[in-house]
Amino acid sequence: MAYIVIDNERCKGCYFCMKYCPRTLIKKSTDHNRQGYFPAEFDREQEERCTGCKTCAQMCPDTAIEVYK
Ligand code: SF4
Ligand code: SF4
Image (cartoon, rainbow, N blue to C red):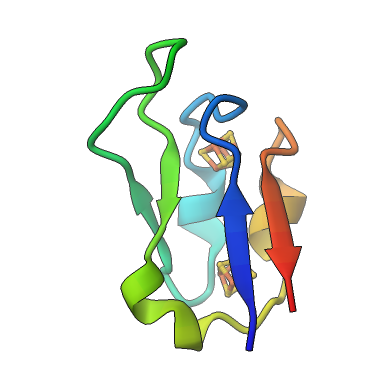
């Protein structure tokens, strides 16, 4: 069992995490943050599919993703 937490305010909406998640568990939020970016959002409905591989966190240039296992 694994999941990720994305810090909405750190996210600058580059979507590298979305592109590289092997399970496509990250999507774009419909709400913008205080900087005006639409942050990446973990798809909690598919949480059980997350392997905790940390690829998303490693790809994030803004260290906005924490992975929990
Ligand atoms: S890689 Fe980081 S900054 Fe880029 S969209 Fe994902 S969480 Fe946001
Ligand atoms: S830890 Fe791996 S499987 Fe889970 S959201 Fe990140 S890239 Fe996807």
